[in-house]
Amino acid sequence: MEVFGIHIPFTNVQDASKQMPEQSDVRRFISKPQQQVYRIRQDIQKWRNAVTVAESLINPNRYQLYQLYKDIVLDAHLSAAIQQRKNLTLSKTFCVVDKAGNEVEEKSKLIQTKWFREFLEHSLDSEYYGYSLVQFDSLVDDNFNDVDLVPRIYVKPEFNLVVPTWAAIEGINYTESPYKEWCIGVGKKHNLGLLMKAAPLVLWKKNAIGAWSVYQDAYGVPLAIGKTNSRDEVTRANLENTLKTISTGLSAVMDIDDTIEFLESKKPDAHMVFDAMINRCNSEISKLILGQTATMDEKSFVGSAEVQERVLIRVGEADEFFALNVINEQLLPMLNGLGFGLDGYKIQAKEDDDLPLMDRMKIDTELMKYYDLDEKYILETYGTVVTKKAVVDTGFSNFKNKLNELYK
Image (tube, rainbow, N blue to C red; front, side, top):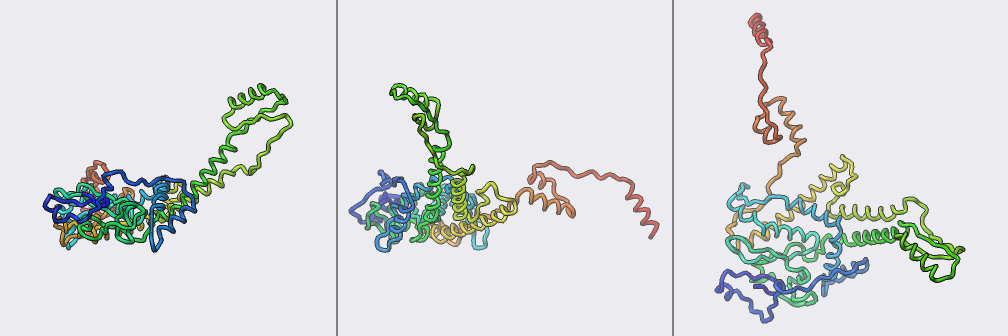
């Protein structure tokens, strides 16, 4: 069942009768149409107002902020940067280890599942959206049916509440039983996420693209002008229709002595005003999300790109540390409370010790000066079938033996 949008999973009717909350006003948010977060035209002033309301000490409300977030995540550069950073952690393989740090494969199977990946992704999203309340559906054979995010507009993390409507101020405390056994709140309660910082950059970028579009419409296609001294309406209408037929841009019918003057920049690269603004916003978004620009910029130099790639690796390591902290400090105790039998164990990410093939080749080349490499290793690593060289006797060994006997 669901109460104020939170699933309360019960395995049987008897359990339900014991744990059923005494609540006269029960609403089902997930199963019926939710309040929609509408996308509206955004600007810097609306961003300032949304942040101010969300940071209110008396009655914080994030609805306007989430409206803004829903609009800006449509930006291709921002969404690509977020996904690139999330993939650094989502691409990891997680396992269960004992106190000695050895993997327990049987226990690892419990988390190498779809629900665990969904929980991990919801946890990482808290870096961008702010606090995330994750709810777990009913448990069948040590596997959750589903893992959902409680819609953010209904969550007031400052007060540990899930409310029936986004404007409500009273609701259910999800840190109390029976809700806390099936819910995990991820992130700091007053954190508004990185999207709060990215929003003005995306809005300025959209304004630059819009202004560039207007500039293109005005000056990208030549203005077609038809001049005539006729006052006959039919003649002027025919001329106007002809101009619209032969021109895809703006057109005008004028008297012979009339003139039109457009005041525009005489520089041939006037479009760079818009392009430079767009590129600057993109680079700032990359720095905010990824800590660098090289992995999102095709013009990066090799040396600089390698340095900045190491910066990205550090960002990924920080996200992994954050995820492991949530998993071991919050998820693991919840799983043990539900009978997963993981007491005394920890969850960690498997170390990725795979080197790029070129780096591996350089190391193996040096080793070959002193050691023989196994044929099977070369085949598995490089996909090349090799056999040992046949030893050709040039007579030098016999000559060397004779010299040794002579000087004994």
